[in-house]
Length: 143
View (cartoon, rainbow, N blue to C red):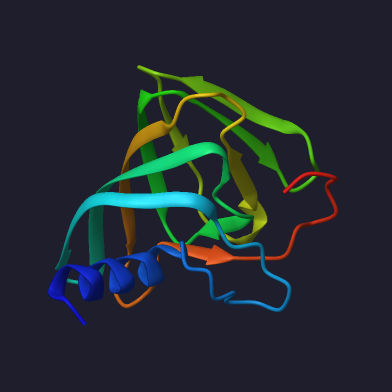
């Protein structure tokens, strides 16, 4: 396996952006690619900085974060929904926002537009954990 492919596979697994579900009937991402990533662990905390592109029609898949996630939208518009199927927010190019942590904060990000979303993510998570946990669709009529 080429080094870049191996690194991408490890990073995608850490971020929960893999096609292998981590929970029964989980909804993995679709159309997401990792452009670049760096991470470091200091003590009991891991810091991850990455850039992800989400193709038109793409989804992050339903998930919750192990730590706080900070996002900055470089291009496109991210539409996020909460587990109760209500709109959490619409974040356009130039917007930044914060995603809370924990299983009570299940959400999904969608690209409903015609251009790819490019977003910078900064996660602060407990060392030894992954950034995101895939979960099944909570019953919404969209992925």
